[in-house]
Image (cartoon, rainbow, N blue to C red; front, top):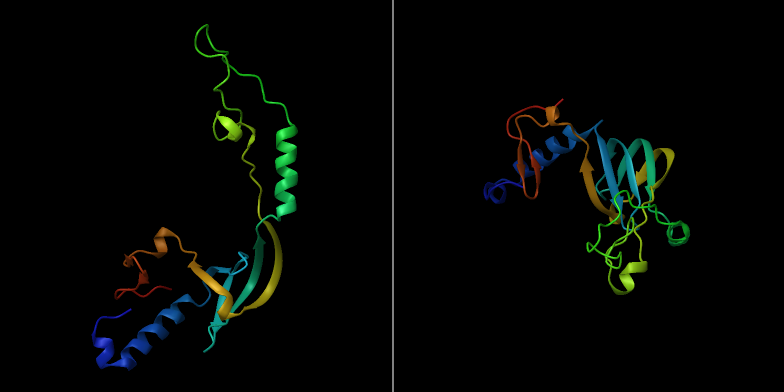
Length: 164
């Protein structure tokens, strides 16, 4: 996170990390864990094992395989809507036309359709997210909150501007 000076002064590295963590308190975080669940809530604290406490937390889950297959079956059972502009003579016989959500008009892809499902959510309240299952942490910020900071490839680092 710091330059090579952190090897000379590990205390300054620790102070920088603590300052960064303190700047996240009371900000909304999106935390993804190993089973692809996502928790969205207000960051309250963490501990030495990287467990994170979130307040006013919602849990979001990807649709189950059964929900996906049911939605796909329902989508394929629906008839294709009529074309607004039928082809003019010689413009095609419909053999290469792709229906709504279909990936291509060739081979077995012709029968596949794309199904869009929402994630399911539920309110949990106060939550401890175990540090060993966390795969991604995102800070929810607006552009106005990011002024004066430089975005880096490996993360966000503050540069002399206090963020409230």
